[in-house]
Length: 349
Image 1 (tube, rainbow, N blue to C red):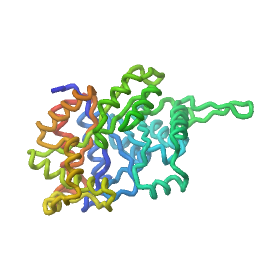
Image 2: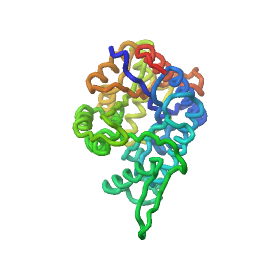
Image 3: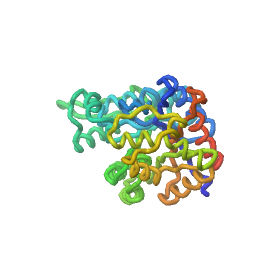
Image 4: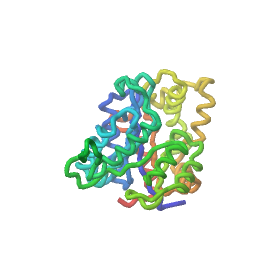
């Protein structure tokens, strides 16, 4: 087993059926603090909008709260550039970097993280960006993220656009994706690449291989750098882990089916329900790529995944459900996941 594997955390903020938003955010902060204490390398936030079972929606808003509540763990996560002007993103994450210098990651994704109506509302009714517009915005964002900013000529004079005046450092920009397209973009720009195995496992090896093959050294990165995110549920036994995974399997099956979704069920409530036949194939698909089981089984699965994809950093997306009698302001079973994995893969703070 690879004892030197670097572990990080991806938090979607699963909202349980007995939690308020405040309860959920409190549990997310506790998870981040624990990850910080255990030596996890990063704590990233996902970006989803108007999804009843997911709290993480605005990385730039919650990342500084996490930063102020932790000591050393890197913070940041996903920003979906489809919804925002690049200068706004550069300003927001530049401010976070200025407050927590050397600790901020800005992960750029191209997807929407929501349904078409909510996406349109986020964009103020404008159309989705074309591929050309996305790449142009990405280039502008990368330039404006640098301390020296973006310089353009207009009317015979040079204009300068700086996200943060007198910035002494910049957030590390990552390209997020699940396809050869995102891998090629990251390689062309010479940026680190995060493959979302938790979203789409198929094609991971090919995309990562293409990224490494086409990588061009840049001022930001001399050699390819990859991490892979994966959904993980750890229980005290295989049977308990399967039980703790069921509520998220219900949610994800409904979500992928385009059905209305509800907050994550408690484990006891999921026990009383059977998966509808229409979910059967989805549940099988999810369970092929999620890593579910006892601490030893999950640690072995993570080590095998890292070896298969030849990566040295795995980002854990802990989604274990809770029991009815557990503290609503904590996520004890998600905390158990990251605690037990830190025992199998000791991290250096």
